Amino acid sequence: MIHIFVVFLLVSTSLGPVLSLQSVPDSGHRQLQNCTLNPYKDIQKLRRVQAYLKKINKPAVKTIQADGDVIDCVPSHLQPAFDHPQLKGQKPLKPAVRPKGYNLTEAVSESFQLWRDTGESCPKGTVPIRRTTEQDILRASSVRRYGRIRRHVRRDSTGYGHEHAVVFENGDQYYGARASLSVWAPRVTNEYEFSLSQIWIISGSFGNDLNTIEAGWQAFVCSCFFQVSPELYGDNYPRFFTYWTSDAYQTTGCYNLLCSGFVQTNNKVAIGAAISPRSSYNGRQFDIGLMVWKDPKHGHWWLEFGPGLLVGYWPAFLFSHLRSHANMVQFGGEIVNSRSSGFHTSTQMGSGHFAEEGFRKAAYFRNLQTVDWDNNLVPLTNIHLKADRANCYDIRQGRNRVWGTYFYYGGPGRNVRCP
Image (cartoon, one colour):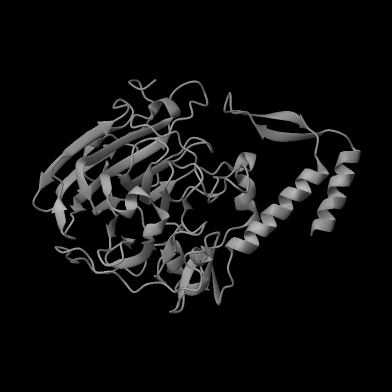
């Protein structure tokens, strides 16, 4: 394959400069620019890509094709987490004890991701991992940055293009959080942006020592006209994702299983795979439950997805501050506003409708809880609401006996009040 690639490059460069579509960050538009290929650099990049693929894609005992994704069933002890020096030779731990006050009242769904609709499943003793392709990595700015997001971290991050509509609680020591969040497929304007809904477990300052654990769903854009796809997935399905960092998104952490970190223990959930079904405006609503909590026995942070499915855990040694506890929990939505056309983005948050429209129209989180020092699920008591640009995306909180603490959030982005 490399030999063929070399021949192509030599022929191309002998013909002189090549016209290519290249992104222009200043304007956000795409235009034709002269670009002379560099055979040596391109071959080196291809070799780095192939080396990374060999490292991240583990031997599978079964492969499942579904809606453009390839799901590999990998023996659990061979998953990427066990490349970590502190995990080599180990096997996944047995499930942790859930917090006290946990009640599972909903029936467990066996079909909540598109790949499960095929009727196929991964055998016991394996974990389903979405296969990373060469095209996935080439969409990223570099092999090193693939699967990682660099963010400028401030409590008010609007100056850097990230906008939020969130509920958060701080002022105590937190050992987990739980909520159910509705799933939508928001419109995302361009390939530089995303829209997500998630839970954050946060510790440290909002400087270089920030530790976070994040889980939720995320949507990107697919711009097929320019053959430009989102950095991670290449489509606009909402996808179940996780993220972690111990140094404010600088060099540690990654999405999903794209580095040595998160240890998956479940053979029914593929992190990074598309969620199905999704909510529709004024129609059926679909939500997923998420819970993250610190196991009192080993100190690791466990993740539950849907009703009762333990996905796996983040080992405590990955973190500095979170090795002990969190000092903030946060729930809600986030978008990136690149202002690529000179005005506010039309990327939607949640359903794309404001909180005031309520059930069946606006996105929601319900049954918000935190986990205390004694592994008890408790209601939020010190709630704060924050909407960075309320005319673009807003939030409204409430409480009742069925949904406990809940909130509606989201919006369309650019409108007459959000120029």
